[in-house]
Image 1: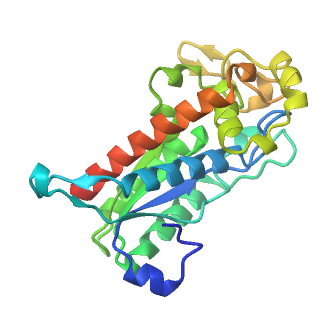
Image 2 (image 1 turned 180 degrees about the vertical axis):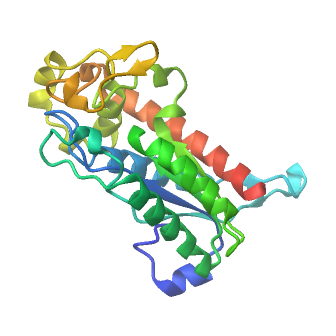
Length: 255
């Protein structure tokens, strides 16, 4: 169920078990991928997982032969600007402070409680949001003003062996975009993106990253080889991530 496309009466009458709140960023993703990449991928995973959730049978409270369908997973509007100051050297990047981000995301989630929706999974597409979202989920779950529970999920941490290939605008993000938003990938810039890419994120000494900003180690904003991410791989990533998110949603609802 898509919240933004629904009427208030449809939300009132729906049997919503859990909300997926996608969180992304507006930041550079090399010369070949759009600034909205993190928001687009998080939203795609949330929507795919919501479709999966509606087909899950509830066998926790009924025998296998008497399993009943669960309610719905609601996908909220995506929060498009995150904690992205590390990309400030690249044109078009937007960001907010961690404090502003945490307050906005938590309050947006808490507002769903007025509609009786108190289980939330923050579906994240940006590495810079991870730390802040962990804090948001804990604060949301501990808030005495409502009986809510929330957790944070980052899609590229839930794709099995593919996770090791995650860079920035590299093979995984390029693959998922090619599967879900192929028209937004600038195919004529893929080779340029590959040639100017860094091999890894940051400059590390004794386990410490000396580079606070991305332009310190990548000239074009890319980390990893985007040519390693075709649409078929993107479909596999979408299946793996949405399946993991669906399983997480079941656990959150049943907790």
